[in-house]
Every structure is written in C-alpha cells, then in structure tokens.
Amino acid sequence: MGLIILFGTFGFGLICGMPVAFALGLAAVGGFVYEGLPLFIAFQRVLSGISVFSLLAIPFFIFAGELMMHGGIAGRLVRLASSAVGSMKGGLGVVNVASSMLFGGISGSAVADTSALGSILIPVMKEKGYDPDYAVNVTVTSSVAGVVIPPSHNMILFAVAAGGVSVSKLFIAGVIPGILMCLCLGIVAYLVAVRRGYPSETFPGWKALGLSFIVALPGLMTAIIVVGGVLSGVMTVTESGAFGAIWAILVTTFVYRELSWAGFKTAVVSSVRTTALVMMLVATASAFSYLLTLYRVPDLLAHAVTGISDNPFVILLLLNLILLVLGMIMDMAALILICTPIFLPVAVGLGMDPVQFGVIMMMNLGLGLCTPPVGACLFVGCVVGGVRIEHAVKTILPFYAAIFVALMLVTYVPAFSMFLPSLME
Image (cartoon, rainbow, N blue to C red):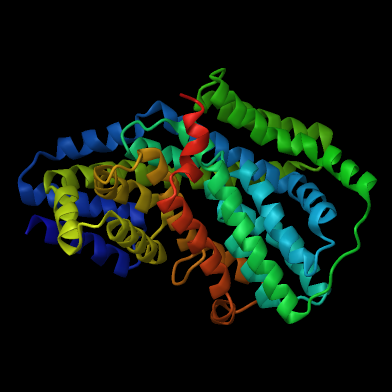
C-alpha cells in the first residue's frame, strides 16, 4: 500500500501539471505520513540531499555554459567545424554534428547546445536549401553530446545519486562514447543529405582552417581547463567549475569582446533559475529515494527483471528500454536522481562498473531530451527552426537509430567507456 501511495501521489502530481520537484516532495510527505514516520526525518533527508560539496560545481558549470552561449564562443566553434568538414556532401549537416561535439563538450548542456547552435546553423541551413525538418533533427539529436562529453553537470548528479562514484572517472569515461555517438550521427546526417541531394560547401583551405582553430582555441580551452584540472588532481570538481566560469568571463569579455551587459544579466538569471530547479529536484528526490529504499524497490526490481530472464544480455537490454521509455515522459535530472538507486544495483549485480552504467544512463536519458512528449531539446529546436513537432518527428527516426546504435555498443562493449578510466588507475 505504501508503494501505491508513493507512486500514485507522484503520478497524480505530474498529471495535474505540477513541477516534478513538487510532485516528488508531495509524494515523499505522503509516504512518510502513511508510514507514521516523523516528518523531521523527511526534512533531514531534504537537507542532506543538497549538503554535498560536489553539488557546488553545478551552478558554476551552468553559469559557464550560459556565458559561452551569449559570448560568441558558439559562432567560432561553428566556423571551425565548417572549415574542417563543410566540404563534404551535405556538409552543413556534418558541421552541425561536429559543432555540437565541440560546444557540448564546453557547455555541458544539451538544451544550451540546441538553443545556441540552432540559432546559428538552422537559418543558414534553410538558406542553403536544406529542408527545415532535417536542420532541426540534426541539431536536436546531436545536442545529446552535451550530456555525455565532459564536463556535464548531469554526471555530477549521477555521482551523488550513486553514492560517491568518482566524478573524474565519469568525465573521462564519457569522451569516447560521446565521440562515437557523434560519429554515428554524422554518418546518418551524411547519408540522408546524399539521399536528399543537399549541396556541399567549398573547402576554404588549410590556412583558413588553421586560422579558425586559433580563433576558437580560447573557447576550447574552457573544456580543457575544467576537465584537465579535475583529471590531474590539481583542482576538485567544484574548483574547476569555478575556474571555468571565470575563464569564460575573461574569454567572452576581453578576448572575443562579445559579452554585453544585457547578455551577462541574462546568463546570470538563467543560471540562477536552472540551478534552483536542479537543487529542488535533488532535495525532494533525496526524501523520495529514502522511501524507495525503505520499500526495497531496488530488490523488487532486480527480482522482477531476473524473473523475466537470467541472461545478462537480455537484462541489460530491458534496463535500456525501461530508461528510454522513462526518458520520454520525465525530466532528465529527476530520472537520474530517482532511477540511479533503483537500477544501479541491478547493473552492478551483472558485473557492470558503476562508471559504465553512468555513461549508459546519460546516453539513454539524453535521447529522452529529443523525444516527444516532453523532450526539451526537441521543443527548443522546433521553435528555433519554425517546424511543427509532429512534422520533425516523422523524419527523425534515422537519427534516433544512430544514437541507439552507439548506446548498444557502449552497453555491450565496456571498453568504449572504461578504457580511458582504466588508464587513471
């Protein structure tokens, strides 16, 4: 009965349009009241959920990403990608993917990637004769790189929810899977472009390519400083996030000189709003997770899954499909906080490293950002591109398939995610 009250209240809150954080909190309070537990325990769980030093890195990463979006870094990365791969058939589609890989590795946000790069590339692609649905689909799906390639604040959430998984290992583990995913998307973007007969751009020459790289280098250094500081042990995750934000201010203000006072205020307001949302989710999900543990939900799920099959291949496929479906109907941050304590023990029981499972979860739930009915990136991309969601979804399936292929490779070939972390041991 307790589980019915917990999930029933949560589901009712979502159906009524209640914010996910409030629905989680209401469900947790309902569960505590039903069990006759003192409510001060619920408040203790709420406070302990956000009293984690690593979480201090999240506002810094979010702020740095906002600064880059408003300070001219995205445009320079697009020019670099265009110089490098724009001469291919349908080159702007591949440029879009390459730009997302570069910008996503700096901003750490899929929505910021879609908004910033979409505003630059989608109008240009439409002007060059690319269909609007193609431009939107490439932009939306390639933005998933922002949650896989480090630095990613969602990986910090996973590390906290998993009970102390190394953030530095998670960061480095996402590099190869992120590149693999972008490679698969690039192939699909190229094949679709060839089939539709899209034009190619003229190669500007090696000198122009080198100049584009030099101009984009200060922006690229943001990711190098942040990730390098963590991996080298010189800085903690929080310190690297703070330094990354400072570097972003210096680059966008004094090097590129494109960060206006209005843009700075917009970045601050957006960062505060996003950080508040994330912290509320962390706080209420902590109390919710306490009841999940009390009701032994991870054990129940493990028994249910193993009751279907004892084949590890099948169980991992089931976990992926469950996460994919959940990613279609719920917010990514909330799912990380709720699902990690439930699914991680099952994956570890099959011999999977928590770091590998973290990367798999990022790819899974990142795909959810691109799918209806609640895909934030899909909504943003369609608004920027002026395309109706139902029209974009009709032609987006090949791009979904590309991400799914990369996901399956990372799931069943541990080396894709664990090779680089193994070098740190």
